[in-house]
Length: 148
Image (cartoon, rainbow, N blue to C red; front, side, top):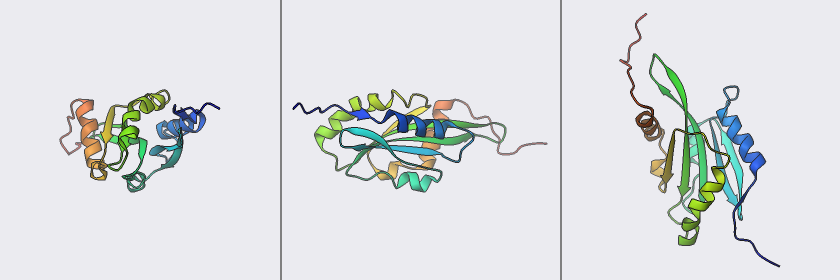
């Protein structure tokens, strides 16, 4: 019997979660994809950022896809951020596999403004994410006041 080491993905559930996050008609703001053995599956979806943060632990690898509203009082936009998570306790071999595993996920998760690779839970910060999206998105012309 041949044992395969290559990563596979539950494409159907990953795509469904991706579409759910992208939809303007649902409350879902994020999805997290984790490994079940060599298979990547959707492990959680939700609306609250705090719950998104809780998905990432130091002994695992994961991917996150999150919808964040950016812009100013004149123009609000939905932006999407792709996170690659490698916890600080993940083995060297598992770290090395992340680039090929990420390419598997990107076959479905293809539309995002910013991609971040994170290894420390302090980096999973909404302010940091908004800052990165604003940098990627160009100028913000807001004054903080909207004249009527």
